[in-house]
Length: 477
Ligand code: CS2
Image (tube, rainbow, N blue to C red; front, side, top):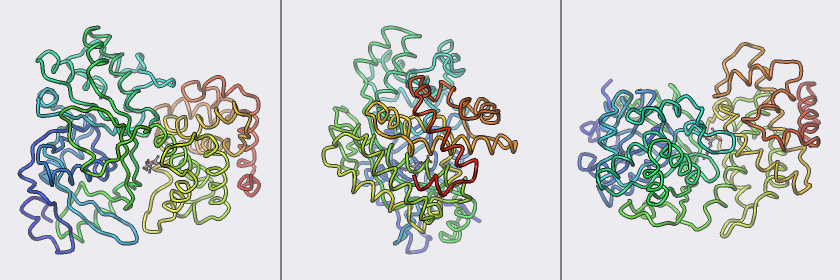
């Protein structure tokens, strides 16, 4: 089967929506690290719209570890299909990528990051991709950071590449690019800024001060449910297009990108592409991370324990859906401050409704990845605040207990755990007292939380309910 390409565009079936600009006429103005499905379905869709108005902002997709996506983008001249799978489905060809840089193309990446035409760098490399420690600051003992501290010319980490790019610009008298982190972390911009300044200080104090003073790292919140592109989905896309597309992505219709309002001189006008600018992005970030991602992780671990496979299936279990609704409305919302322009009750209902989309097959096992990196932002911050305020934590203990049960099942079955702390987690979860051993992992649970007697008892009790098959009682909490 032929591959999707610029020439193939003309012969696609009429129902397929085409780019509103000439894909051959776009220049690179944005460098993006981590062109996984989420980036291709989310930020790229906004930039595609922006390119209809201004051709300067094509994206160079950078992948430091695997060439699969960058090879597909190269083979398809940056084109791929975005399938919006909702009550009214549509397929649209995006033409947002002007370049792709895979592993082993460091010289090209270095040149691009120094290019004055590039005014924005963005990233979706997942929480673990930033090499942060449990307190959210750069982990100087992380192997990639140890490498980058010693060899600034050939970075291994994304943080190393950003700092190297900024260093080249400073040396050449080129204004910096703005750096926009699009991963699910609270204060994502501030964390990446601090990480870059810390690494730069290992190299050159003047560079660190320049980055701290001159480079914008706005916080942002991103949201759109994007199930992985599995072989069945790709086969369906190929059948619909009549050409093969190895970079196709799928997502729900809902999409949101909220960005801290700040001065980004020379950067693309993201507001013109539908991005919301606000003075209170932290509020949106917290609401989204705690409500949507918190409920997602809860459904994932509890749903897998109950034998469900997808978010839709988990939400079709009335006891589990009821539990999730109580957790969100009674425990999580109580931890959120008033957020201007956001009614958290309506927001929570809308989120739970999105989980009931029958057209989306979002695997719980996908959400269950990297629990050690996700749970602190999604559940543990809420729990810590609940304890401080004297609110109950029984329901909030359930996702953690279900995570420990999930780790234990995997470890005892000898199955791989996808998590940067996999070995440590497997060892802790397979022992005699899995709850105490997992709570003792300081990279996940801060001491004050793990050693709070009320919390430790709540996790132990809910774990015992799950382990003893008393799920009715658990979900009635
Ligand atoms: C999910 C997120 O995989 C996960 O952990 O919770 O990817 C979620 O679908 C997105 O954040 C939605 O915006």
